[in-house]
Image (cartoon, rainbow, N blue to C red):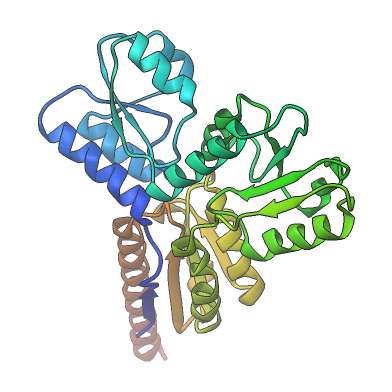
Length: 306
């Protein structure tokens, strides 16, 4: 019998769990609830909540909304969103992750304390256009500089002071590479300060998922295509175990992958629901039982014929 294990460390982080719980509680009351952007970067979970009544809207639709109730997801929002909500009499259910909220406050405080005579560069290591990053940049009236990787650190002006922060789900290793690079290139007349603002609940999954991926013949990484954190974890699994495949739903499981695999590991990102990984396990076990039955039937037929 094939061994199928679900990684205990995979699944929703605290921020996502809280946002989904708040949505479910509100929907259970029978109220109309909007969510500004996908509540989580997982199509299957978004579809489940849609069936419960959650209405996902974008920022253009939000701007036209009045006298409504809107949930802000764990990624957080810029100050302009709250200002517009107040203007349009929108009740906000704020599910911003506490880790993100603290980071927003730190960046805003740094920006507000900037001396106009000695302009600082507030730099955010993160993914351009990501919801969390947009919320962080918004704390600086759009003035923060976003760099996605070490290569983009070349864009900074090393004659000016630099204050470095990070999106909460980025790579710890690359963050410290960026810190080292800036230290090497900063002018003696300029100052450099940095804050490791990467969420440890997310970062600590990296060593755990490495060990998990190495302990199985086959890895199925269950994750929505939009997940920034998922991309990092998937590539780490792939690096450790080349027999790793990313899927968004159980229907994407290729039976060919399962051949000759005695030990199969299922894991995912901070945006992957446990129920979806359980469903993948069920599909694998049913496929294995069906394959074994076919094999036994074929062997029985051969014995009768020959």
